[in-house]
Length: 273
Image 1 (cartoon, rainbow, N blue to C red):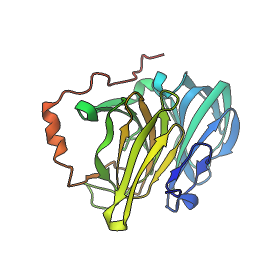
Image 2: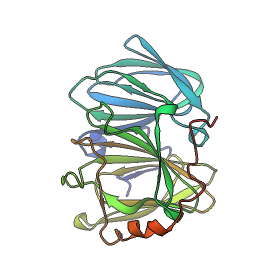
Image 3: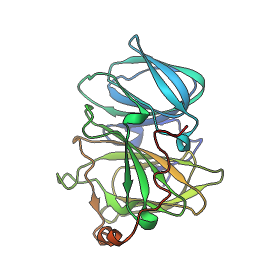
Image 4: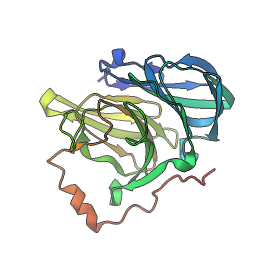
């Protein structure tokens, strides 16, 4: 379990070498800093606070949100081979999502207003998906979404996987889950399983934990009383989010047709402060 679930305080970043996969990087940084993207395309996702970023001499301003439950994200996409500097506006927390790539593209600022909101599921499987780096975005491998799950609800449900190359129904994607909870002491239950690889992990995840998903079906349940946030970074050879439901539980999707979405969703909107 220690190889896939990294506890808050035990990690700062994960590289492809450390994760034992091909493309995906993930890290969280606070305050001002300087860095280089190297052979990686990067999305700087503003988790809290505000900052300016100077990338190869060009300035960008990331609008602030107090924390992830207080509004929509500002994100800056930076291409490979870019030197950049983050200048904090007070306290700031940034997620650094990256994927190894071959082609150098153009930087792009993604405003909170331009992030697509999707309400997915129904009943107590309703959640909010904020599409930040979509398959249509001109990146090479990187995909980024953030997910809000009301307390007591299931998310990433039915359990699904993306570890087989069977387009268009499924593609291979490496993935990270970065968890935040709206209240101190909050938690969720995470399951990750793959009968083919003799993996069946069920664990408690808390604020600041990071889960690596190299393969297998996965699903999450937010504990009653504790709204849940997670940021997903994904990377693969194909620009697709296609996944395959666990066939044992695939019947659940049509069962949602008779259920209304949870009225608590969407939990955040572009007009939130």
